[in-house]
Image (tube, rainbow over all chains, first blue to last red; front, top):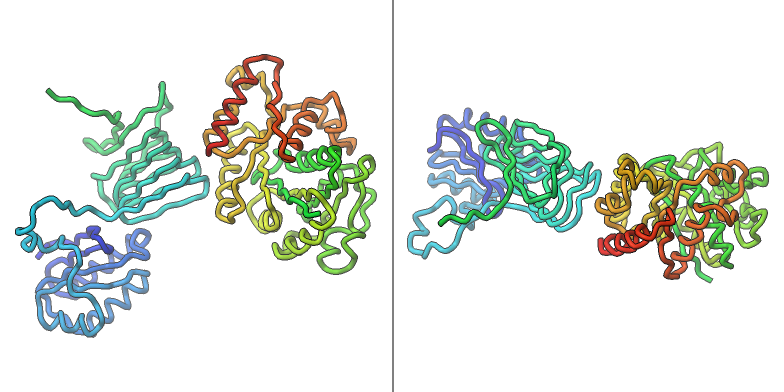
Length: 228
Length: 268
């Protein structure tokens, strides 16, 4: 069982690993996280990994209600405890994820050609001033992001076009998140808690990628590395 | 007869919506069409002043909507062009006096008797703007070569797309070719780069416009005005004619450049 609460994107929504310890504490930590990140979790479907904890229908029912207040839907409970499983089943919750991200053992037999990715959305249009995209996972845009538009993503953002609006990646605290664009000149760029303003352009636009390196936002030209 | 309805809008105020409406109305009427200009800027009406018809107002467009007069009674005939009409806005009311539904109903009534209905939208993105675009077949966006005006135009284009009134067309107003050439003003290409909609006209800055507005005579009626000529060309383009973009500074290079930009803009 994990020590801390972790959130990851799975095929059908988000999977939250509840931390070890008494249920009261775990629940408190879970609801605190949901409260803090309500902006990103709003509208999300949540699966909860509770491991061998024994939980009754009342526990799960009240949890579902509490999450619903934050506009988060609880749809699955993953547990190895029989009582918890039957309680979850009584409430109509799923007991497994369709994708096998949490059960690597089952995958041993299959040939390793399938790569399980994270949840992302694709926007195939130009985002104009006043448009706003908020998504807990990754965001891909095919088109331009004009000044006055904003993208706030829990994961990474890739723009196949010009990025001129405001972009915030790793908005739930992921410092590994990055932004790539064919022409990267955002009004403002944020990665996790770091904020930067684009320097004025020198020369022709080129595909670039910005990430955090040694606690600083660093822009790198996107180029194929040829190594001999 | 079934009129085409053009709504002239911009987001930002002061870019020349009313001037454009009055002049396109006059230019379309000059081409032999029956045209009515409708001022949707209730509470801040100007179109009547620009057209020089202020002193003829008896009934306005809110009177029609609220049933105090017949549509015909609110139609004011232009002083010079006999097939140009104005329906003025009410000055003593506000935008909430009319709903988008009222606008559609009124426009449908007008459609039968005219070739073109031009609606002068108020600035902003609130009720007045919603009213103005509700009946539109074509939305024309007026902007200036200024970052703030272009930003607002972009927002408006997004809203028009959302209302499924797109694709909007663009008039670039008050361009100073000399400043563009020095790199001190946004060029047509910079603007089309962001807005990516079809450009239907570039109107040069022209002192004659101020003179004409103050006199209440549309500048298109002045054969020597460069802005007037630009508006006449836009009217012909709206009628489906293929009119080349006028050279703004008498140089050969500029014309070719604009043609190229037109194509680039058209793809967006």
